[in-house]
Image (cartoon, rainbow, N blue to C red; front, side, top):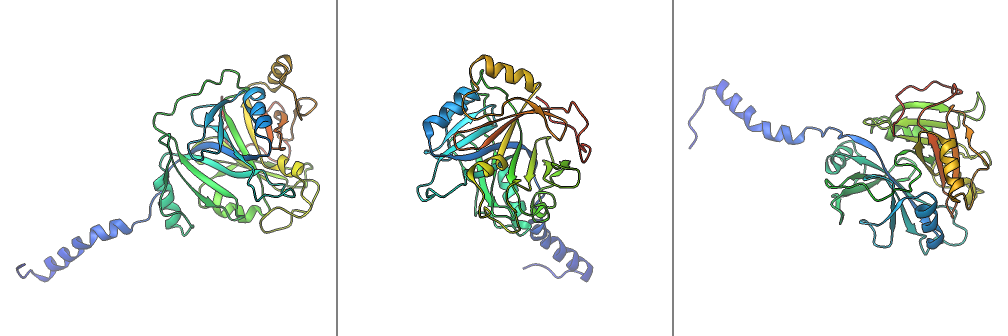
Amino acid sequence: MRPNLPLSAALLAATLSLLPIAAQAAPHARPKITGISHLAVYTSDPAATDHYYAQIIGAAKQPDPEDPKGVRYAVSATQFVDVLPLPANAGVSSVNRLDHTAWNTDNAEAMRLYLADKGWKTPAKVTRNSDGSKSFRVLDPEQNVVEFVQPAANAKAPEATKAIGHHIIHLGIMVHSREAEDKFYSELLGFRPYWFGGMTETKLDWVSQQTPDSHDWLEYMLTSGTVNMGTGAGIPAGMTQQSLGVLDHLSIGVPSVPEAYKKLAAENRLTGRTDKSAKIGRDGKYQFNLYDPDGIRLELMEFHATEKPCCSPFTADDPAE
């Protein structure tokens, strides 16, 4: 039986006995978000899509550790495009070809616990994939699927010697409300401003925000240029597959877009739908657009601007090769 203690000693003992409980109840810190993992897209023609990503883009074809029906096209040890078969229930009228965006983190379980602490709906546990990676998925405020991936500790660079580039520097998604999405990406995840602009000086079309622990960024695509985006979530009525594919996109960084264009042309890799030539975008960076067979845009972009950007200055360092 525990002996009687003076009041002060009893209070101290009681306080100490509660410390483990308090420690367990402490909120979890946000782990690092170390950059882009991948963009997952649907294909209605696997053979044509395979030719596009493996031969034209030059990515390394790999099995998909998360879905045996999928195929990965890797440009580096931790970045790739994930291609999934078009769902059987999609229907001929479906224009969506985006399954999810994905971001690398140094600790998937810690990220899951952090989001749960903040009241975000999360799965009960992370998934351990066959390649040793760990991952889980949530929905952003506009119901876009977002995945967090902790890469395998032994992840190795793929045999992708023909890849036109080896760094996916940004992903873009259709966004209805900047304010709604900021509550998740900026306030909760810590994404920080990089650049914003529009087709004109007075219209906001694009908002770019870098991850908190890398220079990769997410681009809010606020308008299609053809329909009124409105508010809320989902694909607006009247949105075409081609227009949506322009919004939902990925970008591979290259030192020189004109040189990359020349290489693709010389190797007869400019088949299918592409821009007619390289151009300088509103952000002052050279770019060149290619499109996969289902219309998802892949934007080759230089790491650094060659002209002064419109609308706003860059407010963070550029990504690098």
